[in-house]
Length: 412
Ligand code: NIG
Ligand code: FE
Image (cartoon, rainbow, N blue to C red; front, side, top):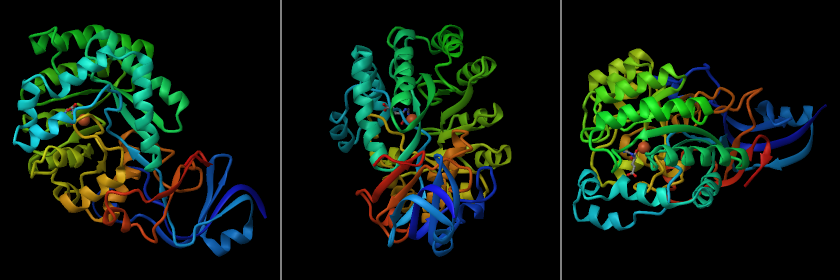
């Protein structure tokens, strides 16, 4: 009998996501390593065994045992695209959207990103932390155990650094692991009238400081018509790469201006949004091994009919992950809700969506020790109060999470 810390037994389903240790593509996305009547064993914060419950129970003497009869166990959700740090809210824009105003029209009238920049600049570090903390607690209750978090509502040196420091400090204290991204090129700030000059400022003044202080792992840009062109984005990202930051890109969200191909050429870790991405772009990204992060909450909240062509991507063997895009325009902390939208609006199957929200999402933030339930991986997993994973997209708008384990410790 091996002495262990925790045993979760009699699980109706465990989805181990066991498989090749690289982003899953095509058919592989439908194989979630489903095990009926399984058990999972934890020792020293790591998973040491997963298998048939009866067998596992015989060989392990656990300090604590949880009976998960009728429940489903999956890896903790990884949310690889969030704008976690902002102050205030923009509920007033919902009425404008209902009346037919587009995202870009609202932005041009001083709403959108720039109104959040105003409130975020005014907020102290402590205030920003408190606002973000509430969102992190909600994310955790809904099953997110790791998340990427972008700056991008400060824009100037002082406020971008303030936001990145908040992310790094929250990472030290909150159970959710956070990965910081610098998104200074999110919008042209009011102090600048020329996007090229602002890109120069980000490139030559802000990024060197961020790199020197180790405040961010990634550099991102909102590459979009009317925001930053593919060439401006290329300039910024190439310099960021030279200074040791890895890159991710907001691309093809509203119009396709060649950003996803530019990102693939620069070996971006991921290209995100991809609503307007064409077949040729998909083939190129599949070939380059670029990860697409799909954010179906965004077209949903913008009341757009078009969603990212997830089916074409999966069928062309391009790797895809899912994320919330949590921001004041698309305020959801729930990866469960995103899975519902992925299935209903983008025609992903429940298994594909589960892979995209766990294993592939972990790969999208380059984390190799999470995203699957296998020997040696971190014990980050969820007990869902449902008998199988198809309930996740099916029972929308609620919270199916019964328990959350982070590093083997029950945190919800
Ligand atoms: O990913 N599109 C750019 N950035 C965010 C939205 C930011 C905002 O509207 O505040 C996004 O959707
Ligand atoms: Fe975004």
